[in-house]
Length: 284
Ligand code: AMP
Ligand code: MN
Ligand code: MN
Ligand code: MN
Image 1 (tube, protein in one colour):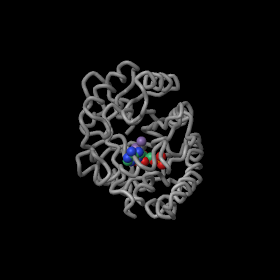
Image 2 (cartoon, helix red, strand yellow):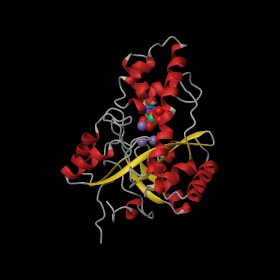
Image 3 (cartoon, rainbow, N blue to C red):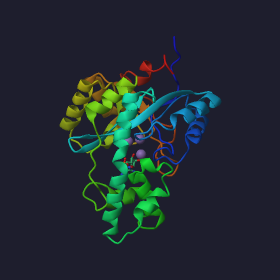
Image 4 (cartoon, rainbow, N blue to C red):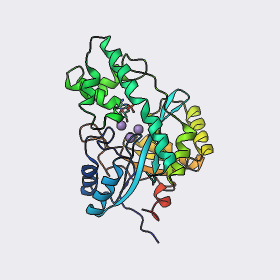
């Protein structure tokens, strides 16, 4: 029998995407918080996994290599986490490279749109927050706009400038849902719908999304997420049962100041769901 983890956390970010801590610092902080089964899941990028794995060995915790793929589905941006992926798999690597390719042009367009409002030099400013310029994200824009005093915090910047309908928002075409699922599976990973409670979709659309995800070969759903209330955890436990999806538990930690839930400090999974780590403990 493979031991079940006591405190799994299967979704978080490092400086390789839009987290504040290096992969090593993420692992050390997780271990310090009692996490014993950790996945690093940077956006569209696996460049932090080797460092994180080495840090996990040093800290004596189990490590699951992961990634969070940006997907466009019916005009909505959906995030699909891949757990237990082989980062060297050429199908996954090529897919992620294609997803990353649009980021710089989009960042330039965002910067131009904000310049039209008189807010200048935003791309350069955002890049000072992006340790990995290939992964420049709205989070880096938001940090810069807070730093220059435009808004008091990152949430306010998103709300007033960076979400659809606001002046700094630029429509982006990310991966197709079925492609993201296929890349993750090609790399030996388990595809999981990230933070379902964050999508602005009706219950009918959520059911349609999950049906399409299962149809494509998707297997898991983040029932416990740093962005879920208790009510949402119960709601998504019901969706997991209805669609036969494995349940994940994930802080989605980005940094002390920006995250409501610290590494490993999420709620336990509700009763009546099958943990996604049942599919991972024999390999990691
Ligand atoms: P991007 O992939 O460039 O569109 O950036 C998305 C990232 O921005 C997410 O992964 C979050 O880290 C962050 N983000 C998105 N929406 C918000 C929000 N409303 N408030 C704070 N951060 C957000
Ligand atoms: Mn992020
Ligand atoms: Mn996400
Ligand atoms: Mn995330």
